[in-house]
Length: 228
Image 1: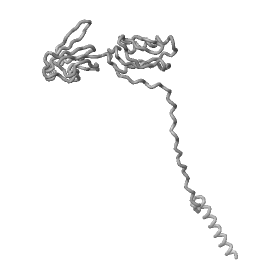
Image 2 (image 1 turned 180 degrees about the vertical axis):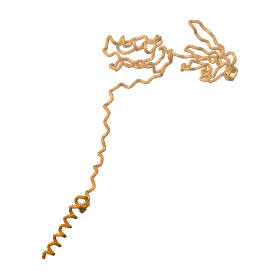
Image 3 (image 1 turned 90 degrees about the vertical axis):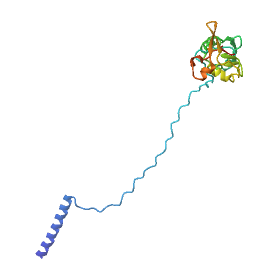
Image 4 (image 1 turned 30 degrees about the vertical axis):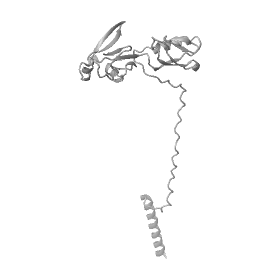
């Protein structure tokens, strides 16, 4: 009996020692639990783009031609006068032969001989007697006062609107070219300089051959080309 008791006691002691040893060394294996469910990723919610603030209401800019740097208003020029605060005072006008334009409320206003900026200042000053906001724009819609003339042995003699950079050779081309019996070597450019008439010689044949190109002058308002 004692022998059996000792055997049982020894076996229990061994089991207890093995359990303590396994716990101290961390080798106790635990049964794996059930796998964790995969994390659910919420779909990204698209964000609406920020709405830009409404642009300030601006009146449309009137369209016109770009005048040359030395431009002054003359008869037959087409202008657009725009008063931003008083549309009833705005008007598209043509400069009369006497150099004036007619506008509502302001009546006749001198325009010829002035630059667009000078006319704008005069209009703003005149309008200050009638309205508080005198913001005004002067837009050149058409330049008809700057003209050059060609006469003699060309296909279409007459007056032509002067565009920026127009030369003698170009004007001859615009006028249809020289006639068959034209004197190509003795064409003249007549110009008023400081109140007196001066003339310049133009040899059409030389210019075509690329010689003496300085004689192909850039034309100025009022120039007259004479083709004998």
